[in-house]
Length: 276
Image (cartoon, rainbow, N blue to C red; front, top):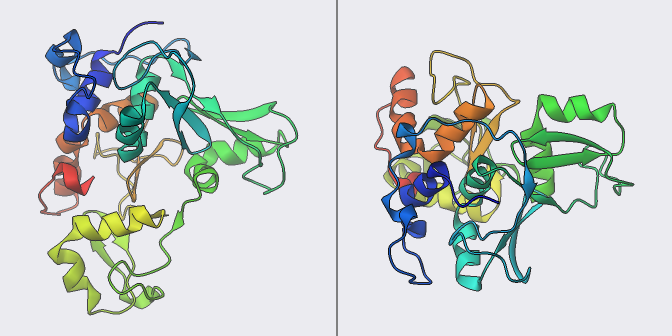
């Protein structure tokens, strides 16, 4: 299996949390990789079983350390790397997809019916994640809106409570912020949201609640519509892309593409890693 690609290195370098190698092996070729946008991204032609730690690139000596995400398992070489993956699992999973790594599926339930999974025969593939169902007829249903069923596997749900006061969402008091449709318990919470949106989105992340974009345009190509077939969930925010390769580009460097997405919607907000 090949070492980390330029895309994976760029994803790690784009997030300060991952930039420092906790094993302190000294500078490596990964530290010198150019930005992801300079790399001609191509979809992997074949996906293989994971054998390397996605953080250090070291061979996995055992399978004792891992993070479970969206019904899939990501193995790492140590507890420190486990902490790093837990911070931004979607970015790491996508970097592994770029490296041609198929994530190990952990499903025990069918996310469509909610019943126990009988056998792993019928599935929909999204990037390097598989979503298994009992009935072959449900594969098309999952393919049309995979985020809905990944949410089931991850234990995520649409926002239910206000991130400020914790009260039940009042549909008439909802508002838009950073391109997302956000709920609140009363109109008075909007000012507190806007004072520190990163902190409020962090509350939703902690509660495993997700919000949807106001505009379905693709963040990488704002003149095109995104598709529910290609979702990306960064923290509490859901985005829809117009293809697999475009999704790879976005996850590798969202700070590059979000300003254009905001501008296309007439939104003026600073884009910082803390907000993603």
